[in-house]
Every structure is written in structure tokens, then in C-alpha cells.
Length: 281
Length: 279
Image (cartoon, rainbow over the protein chains, first blue to last red):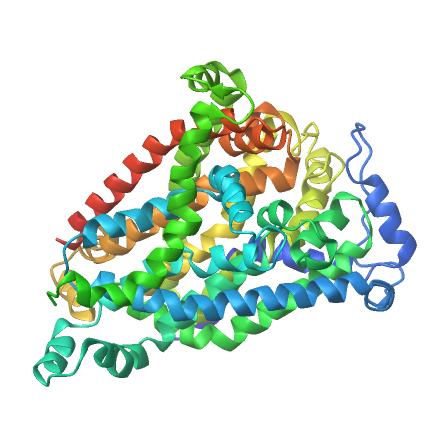
């Protein structure tokens, strides 16, 4: 078969993927527009006149890296917010990796009284959109004196129910016999967990870490509510603010903001694929 | 493995403590605020009745329910379609899965301007429509905005579910498929009798996660249309958010408790579904 067959499959697949890639490629394309082209574009978007169309500016008339130079040289806030975001993600993900896997293990593999009811609490929290909780959560943050500190962003991500839910799915696929064999040998539970189950769960942890990092990197509402100090703002919020104010710098910043996640994604891709195939119950 | 509560406790205690402080605790904390205010004292059932009668709350409720009903089948249907294609085009499966996953991990804000550019009143799509003699459509305001929000949702989430569903589909035991082939089952029958039963637990799981994402669709609406959007994309969260920002904690808390039974019911149904899928 099959070379031609393969070629056709690849071509069709690429065609199917195109709508998903197009917005990303366009975003990249916009960053090479020259200064006046960007300004014209931003002026013209959002006009409601019949028969008047946006100038087609791709490919750019005068390709330049000027936008990147502007952003990197004249916008120190971008670097500050970039490193803030990086810090929030690192803290959130590492905290999550400490807290979620043992809980997921308990809910998947240990049978104790009250397990169902407790897990019900996790799924309920999972189904509550953030905005539903924003009022009481703000009051909680006030009461805990976390308002306007990085912890207001990090802690809810550390204790997010989603990784517990995902990892429970993975631990369920580990056969009971593994645990029972260890129990017969008299190994304490925590040792079974640390020495047998945790080493198996690398790929599943990669999936959880990737999703958690992506969520945290993209937060907008939480920092908007909890962080009054500009200096603490994450990049995602900053881009949103720049875009709302139609500042042309948001284009290049957007692309820069994609890079860390893209890098992490490439790094974890193989592990994640393994993890997904193990996680399916 | 059956263990007593105190042996299991150390494993989930930190996680549960955090869940109580940052999720379930605040949820319970909202209740006093719906019936009592520091300034006005005891409020009685007033905030609840007002909220129920508020036309914006009703609009929000309708829209949130509508988005849930639209997004979940659309996303899972599309994801299932892609997964079936990947199951055929195995040589392309790996990279196509990865490409489709990108919109889920990359910041939506970053691609938003591209969507604006494509769907603007004077944007590329309208330019194309004009070429074919069709009238321009305001995709980014009014009634059509609903479709645009759905599109943005599909763009972002489809790949996430393709990753789950296609991985599962690719792990269908070969001998089941061979056996079905030998029995002369056509592609449709094979899907129904072999692939679908194998897929069932993952589908239930995907259903939960997709419902979660659909409840968060406020994000897409907010990014596209701001805090006070057209009534067609005004969701429950807009109502909560705006009440909260105008300092009306009582109404916001009351609305929260009116939504809660719906969420709780969904949780029960989903957990039942999970049991059924595993049985």
C-alpha cells in the first residue's frame, strides 16, 4: 500500500487540521506587519459599514521585526508579567503534583467509608465555574489575607479538583493485584504508593501537569479579581488589557506568550500520549 | 483494596483541606450572604424572589442552558468524527492529534484578534460572502454572536477531546475488529458493535469534562463581547459577575444557590453514568 495511500491520508488530515491552525498562523503573521500597517489594521477592525472591507495585509507589504523589538525593548512590563506568570505556573504545578496524586490514588484504589461522598464533593467543585464562586471566594481570600498576594492565584490552582479527577482515572487502570502483592509482603501503604504506583504514573502526571500549566498560564478573571497591584499581574491579563486598549504591542506579545506553553507541550508530548493511552480506564 | 478511613486519610487530607478552603467552603459561605447583609440585616427570601424575577437572570439561565445543550453534542460529535478519521489514517494520527491539541493549551486571548480579523463586519469571511453576492453578516454582535462563541468553543476544545477519544479508539483490541470483519460486519455495524462499547467509559468521562468546559463558556463570551454583551450571549456568570461588581452580594449569592441544585443534579447523573459505563 501504501505510499500513495499514506500521502493522501496526510494531505486530507492537514486539510482537516487547517481551520484549527489558521487562527494561530494568522496571529503569527500579524506580528510581522510594519508599524503603519498594524495601526491601520487596528483602526479598521470593528467598523460597521456596508461594502467596506479590511485591507488584506497578509503577507505584509513591508515585513519587519519591529513589533518584537518594540515589545522587548520598550515594554518592561511585559518581562515583569512574563516572569510573574512563569512563577505562578511553577508554583501551581509543583504544588498540584504534591497534593493531587496521593488523593487520586486514595479515591481510585483504597476503599474506605465515605469515599463516594467525598469524591462527590470533588466533582461538584469541578462542575462549578469559577465565576459562580467569585463572590464567596473573594470574601474567603479577604479573610485569609491572601487578597493581592500571589497565593490567591496559586492556591486555588494547586487544589483544583481537575487533576485529582484525571489522575483517579489513571490509578483505576492499575491492577489491584499490584497493591495486594505489596500488602502481602507487609509493605506499608505509603511505601506501596511511593515505590510502586508513583513511578508508574509519570505519563499521567505529564498530562495533569500540562493541563494545569495551561490553565494557570491563561488565567484572566482570577488575577483581575484578586490582584490589585499592577506589579503582580500575569502576562495573560496584561495581554487582555493591551488588546482591550487596542495597543498594537499585544500582537507580538501574544506570540511570545505562546512560546513557553508550546515548548512545554513539545517536551511532554510523547509522555502525554503514553499517559492518555493509560488513562483510558 | 479495603482500608479503614484513618489509613486512607493522610493520602487525601491535604487535597481535601484545600478543596474545602478554596471551593466547597466558599460555596457554603455564600449562603449567609444571600439572606443577610451587613448593612441591611436580615433579608429573608427577598433576594431569591428578586433574582428569579429578574429578566437578566432569566436570560442568563436560558443562554447558559442553551450553550450547554449546544456545546456538548457539537464538541463531542466533532471530536468523535476526527477520532474515527484518525483511526483510519493511522499514519497521520500522531501529528494530527498534537496539532489539534494546540488550541487547547495555547492562550485563547492570543488567537482572538485573528478571529476578529476573520469574522469582522469587513473581515475576510464577509469579503468572501460578498464575492458570492451574499450580504455581510455582523458575526461579532447581536444574534450571530452566539454562533461565533460556539465556533470559538469548538476551536478551543475539540482537540482536547480528540486526544482522549482517539487514543481510546486506537486501543480497540485487534481481534474484536478482526472477528467482526470475519462475521461480515460493515463499517457502520463495526462502529456500533465493536468500537462504541469499547469507547463507552471514555465517552462518559469526556461528557463530564465537556460539560465543565461548557459551563465555563462565559470566558469565550467575555473575551468576544465584554462584561455587558448582547442578550444572546449573556450567561449566568455575567449576571453573577456584574451583580458582584455593583456590590449586590445578596443577589449574586442568591443566584449561586439557584444554580447549585442544577449542578448537583448533573454531578449525580454523571457519577451514575460512570458506574453504568464501568459495569
